[in-house]
Image 1 (cartoon, rainbow, N blue to C red):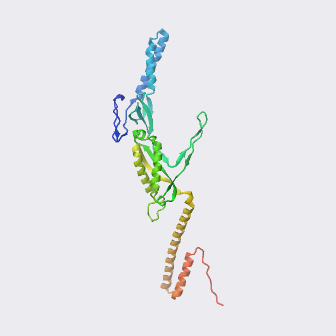
Image 2: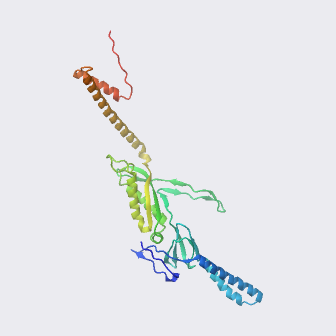
Image 3: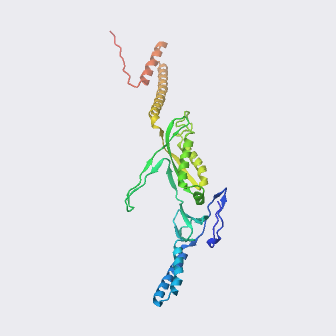
Length: 330
């Protein structure tokens, strides 16, 4: 983005750049506050000197000269402002955007200019979180800090199952003019768009993919987080906001189906475990029969071989230890 600097007096500032009807940020160079501070103090000194001279000489002329100086000094005080690190001030004079000051330090501008603060710090927002107001006494002292509560969004995944999901969005303002003039309350705009994007994205994926290796909300958190970031970046770019990172912070089935889904997951885990056990048991039986045949330890008829296989499988697959039976003669 091209940046235009205003040089010289503020009266020579050009009109703001507009693309598609939206204002875009341009840097503005105000007068140094350290230059105007001695001049303001000098105006106050002239007024004080006029008051003293009027009292001593009993003539109103010095006071008549000092009163305009007091008025100018009073107005000049409202022109001072400070820009802190990772901070900015957007200047608006009589409804016209003058520019944005990002240079840190003490500055001075037209006293009638509105100086709107826009922080450039990286901020974090979690969908569904709410911060309660702090408890204060009548004197304004904070008695209890505000608490943050979490309420994950309830949406339906691709299978129609109700789930609760929340995401963390890391963002910052990159264009102060668009953040102030393109939308109303850009911080609230970020929250609403983040929740809308998360709802839209969660409805496009399975909670658990029915196919091995498929994309799912639970199994592909990095990929889903990256796609959420891309969608949010497209939604918020027009508001002068850049999304640095986004990822799912909470994911679970809704309470009304959580118990049933837990049983389903447990059943799937049991089936998978038994399948592994059976595969291992069959391999062990096959190896045992090959070793017996290779070493000629015994010769089995087909009926005896079937019984041997059955007994070995029972021993290997059973969840309890085998109870051997010893036959003794009468």
